[in-house]
Length: 385
Ligand code: GLA
Image (tube, rainbow, N blue to C red):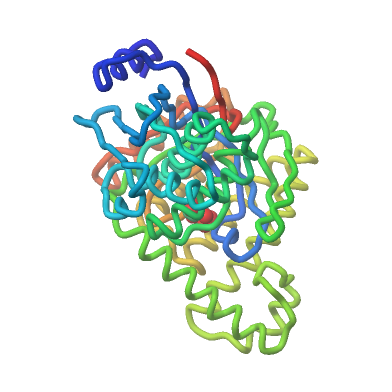
């Protein structure tokens, strides 16, 4: 939505002019999937698809929320922020406000209009973008200085303990800390990070949504977390490690006998995916895009066969991409079970790629995929309007 249009909607919802624009990013993840909650390294980047909040400080005790495409206004009473856990819309905002208050921030009433261009349920982290942008708006209006990493951690806490999704730190960190034209190599066990230029020369990343209807992603996600916990406990009987990500492939070969069934498969994915992250970063730094593409493909196969979080739609979409002559690699990103893929495609071939993969996908699955025009941008932005 254009800025002028959003300002008009703000006025319609609240009867006053917006004064500020706070934004936070949706994200892709180049590689390092389902390893953040195992202490691994991830390699996400912030997108031009964002949660935009048009805002006005009102003072008083109420945070008012309005949303693009949704009628009405949701009111959050600052003195009873624990009461909104079951809200379908507004619970992420309430969770962020709740944990800010718990930290001692004196919240100030405001009006927030959400124009979120991150497609919901797409694996591009709309929820993290909403949480991070909300935290920024509330910190700014409270007049309290904030650190972006702290904003990411608080947002993750709101998602874990208020909204009940046991996610890792990757999405919120990328949403807050992303940097234009860079991916963030983040060590999820220490939160140390490094920005790496995401320079793909004649190639670019194409983001495609398989558009599978939402199907209990959160509960399946939480099951995967339990499975890797089980694996870690077993490994810890013989190895002094805090996280599965500390195991090298060689270490894993030594302890594999302790694991069986799906638990062994899940742990193998984690260890091998962590190994691939290092190789992928080296390949990118060396400009070896063919190797990067190969590692993306391997990541997808592992998420399919060992972690079992892909499904027919994502396998079809990435499989069709891989068949294209000008595509170096393709994989699902995010939690999986639906959502998006990324593919490394020659810039000059993108139009044909989208046409052919789009048509073949619709033919195979029965409904269309969506392709997004994306760029890599900064995480948080704050501006006057
Ligand atoms: C979701 C979670 C992240 C991460 C990914 C999988 O996006 O929110 O923390 O675990 O899935 O890599």
